[in-house]
Image 1 (cartoon, rainbow, N blue to C red):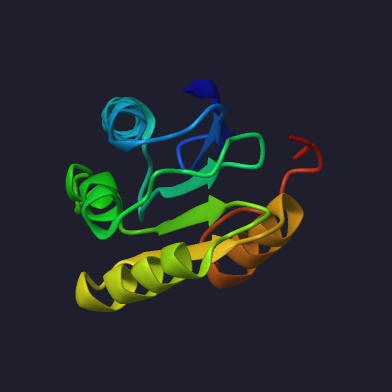
Image 2 (image 1 turned 90 degrees about the vertical axis):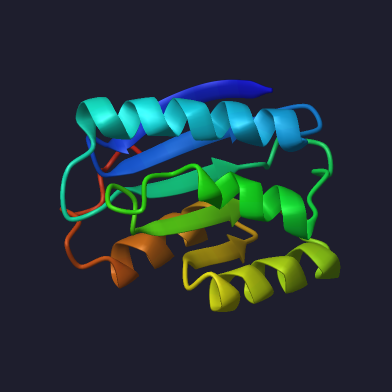
Length: 137
């Protein structure tokens, strides 16, 4: 279930805060919302997405679900990073993410800490403005 959706950086970084047990339906809901947000407010050169799963139960993630999470996003509008923040990533999830990022040539990673994810994103995407002072979850 999507608890909160916001533009951390307007037009550039979307954050989905998710609770409960995210499965394929939850991922599709995020996809659909991201597509709409990017179409309305997305800004060049690309949009980054953070899935904040810190308050979620262990997600039902499989190779198929992870692939579905990425395939609906317009590749022309979304060439940025997709970061999954989860305090206890399991080895299967990390393997799936690694395989997908290589096979699909997408920027996808799992990071354990929200603040660490933000630091990573603002370091690797030089096109972003300075990190906002208020990034509290």
